[in-house]
Length: 71
Image 1 (cartoon, rainbow, N blue to C red):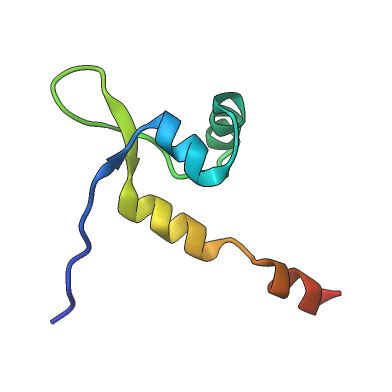
Image 2 (cartoon, one colour):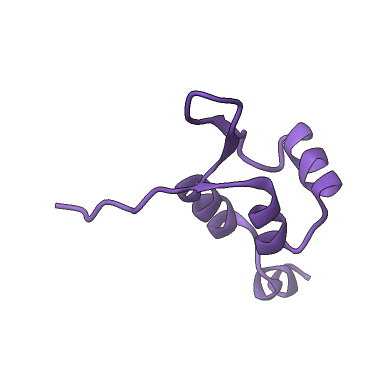
């Protein structure tokens, strides 16, 4: 049986820190489809990204070694 991942919501400010970008860049990347879509959570207007979605997104990004190998 696979172990389940702990899922938590990541708000925009925290995601900006994780990715090292501004909120404007974050919104542009989301708008352009470079990030997984935000999810609404809770009864209010709170939105964020599921930690598992961000983990998967980061896993799929090419790293510097991959880019060098393609040259």
